[in-house]
Length: 311
Image (cartoon, rainbow, N blue to C red; front, side, top):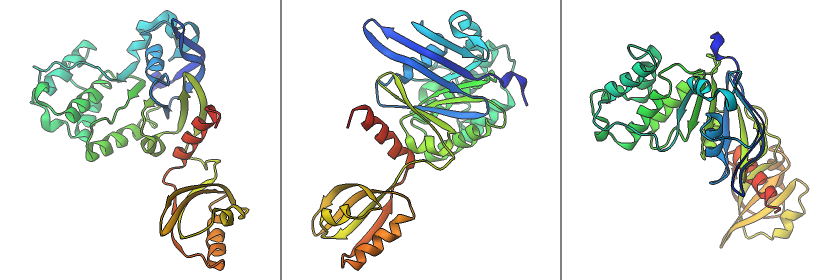
């Protein structure tokens, strides 16, 4: 185990204001070595500001941020040496080839050549096929791959990844997921910011939901989610009153009506779904389909956001 990869990110009572606007409001958060942490939230929730605070690009108003045992407020330059970052608006030198550009950044970090890790990651992303192409001729997806490889060139213990799979094709996404999943064994700290709930549920170990600058919920993933099961029933004409009498049913939402009716319901547990179907059949109601929700994290995300709005 690499000893430099111990420490992670610890944030306590972080508040950041821009004038009267509170961008981050008393945030408590941690990203641990050997784990993939994620932050998700609507536009304007504070995700980008959080990353800027972690790397010391903006001065915080109150609170404390510690990265690899270093206080960001007093050691920002040293902190940035430990971080690999990919975010929007990162410039590329269009006249340079892919290989020359990445080697140039390796040289800036005191490396004579690209590391084996960087080359392996480039191969997983399918980037080495464009090794001798100038950056100005690359597609958006291939430029994104260049930025991904650049962020690990100096072998940083912390990875901050803001929408890292933007513009990537399916094959390259698989390569990215494989690489990121392997970071657990290296005890790297990975912080992923994305709007893609399916990607978070696939690769992250824990997720924090941001809304209006507040951390409203943190959820450990890879364990059973304490949330009712969402199921969509497609039925012949059926009165809402009938479903409301089922003790297993918590919430009912009619999503489509016509010759048939589609209803989205929250039931108490997956085991109660067959009983609901049997009861409908005994009542003479034909059940055309039963479709479970694709993502438990999706339900939690919208449920927590609805609660914050007071719905």
